[in-house]
Image (cartoon, rainbow, N blue to C red; front, side, top):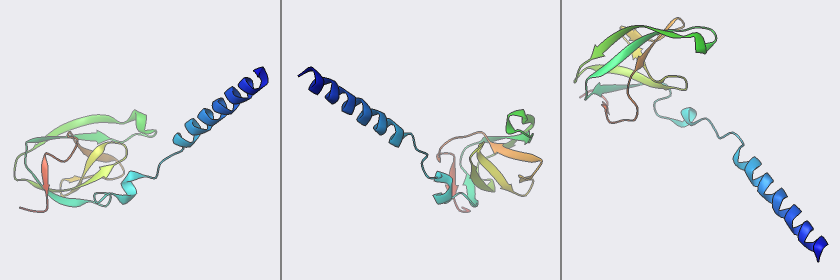
Length: 116
């Protein structure tokens, strides 16, 4: 009886450990399937701040060097970034190898897709 109980506990521990391992496996990159991975034109519906970030290598050494304001009705091309969230991709706010223009909002409530 004691052997059966210890065997049951061992199997249960192994199963729980395996279940934790399976759930800890990396998930597919959400950005790859996002409609904003390559950039989309949007119309700003709320006043939005944009910060200019000087990119460093490694990324942890990046720092903010300036701020800009976008007002309601402004049109800008944006994309999702795995580091910063939303990043500008058009006109004066075109992110590149040295600077990134990061929009200080999360979610989708501050813009409408397309030019309105």
